[in-house]
Image 1 (tube, rainbow, N blue to C red):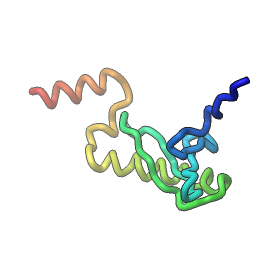
Image 2: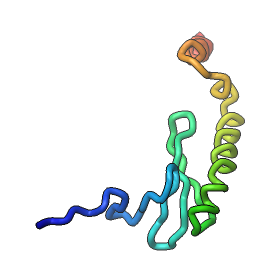
Image 3: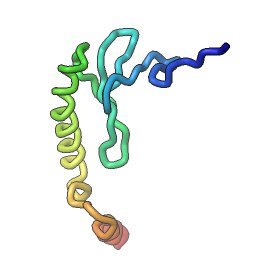
Length: 93
């Protein structure tokens, strides 16, 4: 009988420990992985305990969203498809 590897562990050494949190097995450090305006961001939490990393996750996500909004202020106001269409019209014309 074959046993399949766990779906949370991959050959690369990453294990999912909570929503948006992954542990790198080589260093035992926990990283946050989430999307900001369509781009995947991976940030080291500096923690090895899941409880502490979970508490720090909200601050990391807020910092990344703020940083992306400062880089392109027009993207921070887009909430709907109509808003995205208005930004594209401004860029084209």
